[in-house]
Length: 320
Image: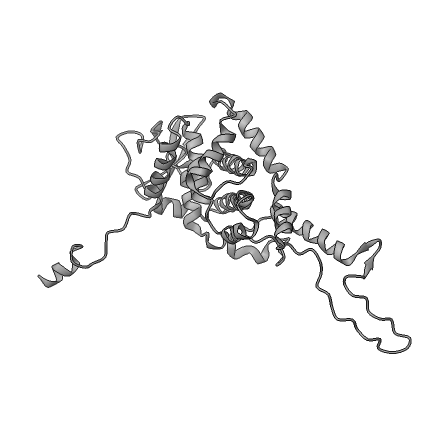
């Protein structure tokens, strides 16, 4: 009797928490989007859900659960499903669900890559001072998305991909760091060294040494810029792999989005989020290519199958 009272939720004192599982959490975010933009199509709502999930994430905290969550937001229930311990992929060309065995179909990789480009491009297209809140972010996205009709999906994708190709917003972000005094603009001055004696040249300080017609300070700035660009071209596969990625530098723009917002103000945080989104989707694709994330999706994104065609959100096709 005492054991029963101890285990009873009315007596142990710990309130029953809301589910933090991937599918319930996605449904909660979708409800926020649905309440604010009920007329948006499913594709735009998925973009907004992914944006709400990512815009307050720190890269240093990301793990396989985040990969599985992004995979569910991007492809869940219409290209990928998990039932009874097995993963199923949807064949667009033949209209049926097939059992995943070795490698995901290439159209799923292309869809994930394209979805990531569009999401990153939307963040890069945001401008002005946008408060870091769900409603404000959705409104900022609407300013961009509502320029295109539902039938202009190709035009939307092309414009957002161009935002990514040109790294739109990076210059504004660097300017914000420079103005805030957080970006290194000069090398530290070293104390003047005394001459070691006759016949020995006095060592030049970093601020005055020359390499050709370029000062060491200017060269350092240019190298720092190159390293930053390389970091964008070669993002780490996962936070723990950063040391192996080319272009790593301790003087790069901070990767912690929350801390970086404090440094650059509310006018550039969405560019930092865009950079984080780019790295996350590249990481997701690379790990899917190596079959390192699909097992987590299969474990954490299980849905009960329906009578014929699985779960009901966008049920279609037969299982073979």
